[in-house]
Each structure stands twice: as C-alpha cells, then as structure tokens.
Length: 140
Length: 140
Length: 140
Length: 140
Image 1: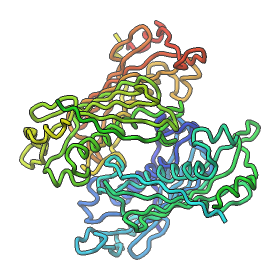
Image 2: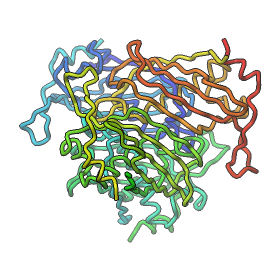
Image 3: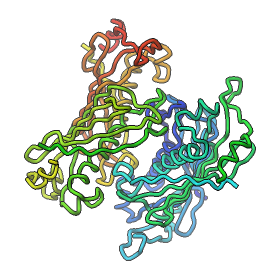
Image 4: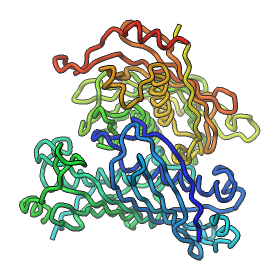
C-alpha cells in the first residue's frame, strides 16, 4: 500500500486571496502540483528539477478535482499532506489533504500518467508501465 | 432544462503556460470562474460586478473538477462554453467545455451554492433556495 | 519615430483581484506582457506563437516598472495601449498605458533585449542588433 | 537608518515558470509583496493578517520596479532579502534582493503609502504621517 505521506507547511499569502478574502480556487491546484513534486522527492530522493532527467519520465495531469470544506484565509498556516491514492498500470492518483488548524479545509485528487516523450505519437507522449521499484518507494 | 450556453473566446497567453509549453492546470479554473460569471451575465443581464448587490447572493464554490483531453498551447484560440449542468434546491453545477480548433480540449464542472452572507452562521453564509424565476432564465 | 500603438480591450476578472477588491499588482505585468506580444503582432504581422520561429529571436525582459494611478476593480473595462518607447541598438522599451473609463489607471514600462539563443554564451543568449526593417515596422 | 533586513527562503515551483523554463516576471511581484509583509512582521511583531486591524493602516502600492539580472529556474532555492529603502513623511520604499546560490538574480523596489481608509476622500484613502515609533522599529 502506498502509505508514504509527504507534508508541506506554508502560509496563505495576500496574493492568493480574492475579493471575498479567501484563497481563490485556482491556487489550490498550484498547491497540489507542488505537493506532488514534494511527494516524489520524498519517495524517490530526486529533486523536482532533476526528476525528468533522472527518471526519463514526465507526469502529465489528466484529471483533477477539489472539494472545498472550509475557506482558507490570508495568514492561515496550511499543512498540505500528499499521498498516492492508487497506482494503476501506467497511471496513478495523488490524494491531497489541506489542513488548517487541524481541520480539513480542502481535499484534492490528481490523476497523472507515467509517460515519456514520444515524437512518433500523435499526442507527443507515450504511457509506460510504472516500474515496481518505483511503486515500492511509496511504501514506508 | 437549463439549455442556455454562454460562449467566450480568448487566446492562450504566454503567461498561462508552463515549462512544458502548455497551459498550467490552475489557469483552467480561472477560465471556468470567468465562464460562470459570463453565463450569469448572459442569463440574468446583470454585470458580474453588480451581481452580488443586485441579487443579494454569493455563489461559493464547493466542488470543482477538470478532465484534460488535449493540451492547450500558447496562441491557441479557445472557445469556452458554459452551461448549467443541474439546478438543485440551493446549489447548482456549471459545466464548462473548452474547445480548441473545434475539438474538446478540457471539460470542467463547478458546484456552487446559492447563498447569502449570514453573520449568525458559523460558516458566515446561509444557503437559500434558488428562485424559480432565476432557474427559468437559464432556459432559452 | 515608433508611433504605432496597439490596443487591447479586456475586462478585469474576479480572479485578478485581491482582498482589497482591486487588481493585485502582479497581474498588471501579465497584462503588459500580453500587450507586448500584441504590439509585435500588430507591427510585424506574425502571431505570437510563431514569432520566435519566424524571426529567430527571443525578447528577454531585463527591467520592468509600473506606476499605479487609480485602482482597477472587478468588472472594469480596460483599454491597454502599448507602444515602443525607444529602440536602442539591441534593446528596446515598451510603454504601456492602461486606461479605465478614459482615465489613466496604470503606466508601465518594459525593457527587453533583442536576442537569440546561444549555447556558447554563459547566459545562454546573445544580444543582436535590431534590424532597421524591424524598427521601421513600428512607424505608422 | 532602517537597516533591519528580513529574509525568506523558498523554492521556485513548476507553476511559477513559463515556456522558457524560467520564472515569469509577474511572480516576482508576488514574492516582493510577501517579502514586505514578512519585513513588517519582523519589525513590528504583528502577523500580516492582523496588521491592518492592529495598526489601523493599509499600505497601497503606488510604484514598483524590478531589474532581472539572472533567470530564476524551477527548483532554484531563493533567498529573498527585504529592507526599507527610505522612509518619507507618509510613504516609503521597500528594497528587495532575490539571491540564488549567493548571486543577485533580481532586484526590486516597491513604493507604498502609509494610509487609512477615508470614505470622504475621492480615492477612498488618506495618507498619514508615518509615526516615529514605527520608523524606529526598522532599525536594529
């Protein structure tokens, strides 16, 4: 089971908030993206900027969702927990929980493909099977 | 049936794109948000900045999702079609389709509440029933 | 004299505004960037996404500034006027004026280099002289 | 002399970068804004979200500039140093230096007004003299 959980703490900035005084929804998807990079760095020990080079893969996003439970506000200290939700043959889900003061504020889920660039493919990418030794690194 | 569809055309800007040369996913949620404002302006004839004042309501987002079919790239001319997916008692869905060169690039869905500010409520807002005459304005 | 002026009209979106209800300052630099692409398209007849390929150049930004005269608010209809401020040997300035309801709201200036990619240079780019026939296209 | 310097360390995220693979210029103004809040928190011991309430003031931005010396890239660890450049009667400058690997990457400057909301003023705000005891808190 991919039970490794990465954690990132940060503070909600003025620039993240909209005229209602709360984080505008698009920002959460920036938070999630960064959470995924940190999860992979935690599991694989490869820095985000080196991952594509070191592993020869890219992780295109095919589906994403978020459920907003409580608004996040300017100055809120956020804990973002990221974990693999599921590994499939050549794709996987990352589950994100964004906690404020110990309570769930936002839940998110990204579905990504384990892929390589492929000039011969119409989409420019080709999905690859996720190696077992990668999967095993997400288990503590 | 809420069959009114609003349409917005715009061009993908350099600033919307990431190092992969495609629109970074969070931007689509900005596009969707603006699509919803335009749909309401189209249906109700109220400018976005006057809607809260004119109707006495706000439309907090509780759930959002997107499915990425084809990447959007710098310079792509985008058609964004927005339509009510479903009206419920005091909430509703907006379905967004983002087309590039006539093909579906991204599908999105927002779930929003029809609400008013309420200082007595712990959440600061109170859901209200969506008036029938509002619902009827989203039918052509 | 580079007197060609390009014009772009757009509306300030909810997502552009901060908790003070006004456009957050970083957004103006997105507006300016897009204004520059439109100015070049207007002058040279080359679409933004083709410019680097067609001309073999890139336009790195080296300096930028803005002066905020009047806040821009949600729903404001903005006219952005962009014009070359000065052509130098291998760099140039773009002056941007952002008007709301006929009054100046923001003034901006970008300084950019006329450059090509150069793997042999430590910076990865090499400045080139701006061709006379390019300069002349910014005169009406 | 206002010699207090605040420091923030962060990492450049994928979402901050453009198709050239470098931080898009508008992001630096988000970084600067947050640097100013942190400088004020460091000097005054008031959390950003409480500052307006505690001091009764707002700090509208009237002028901003940046000079880009070296590109910032995905994964770069950034040190942002923020310091008062000058206090005037009712306005002040904040100087920002963004360092990567010990070298200056970007220099910025914000000019802000020390103001209060004023419904009687056409602009909605009124500049106030900066109190001496505030100024003195920016000296170490």
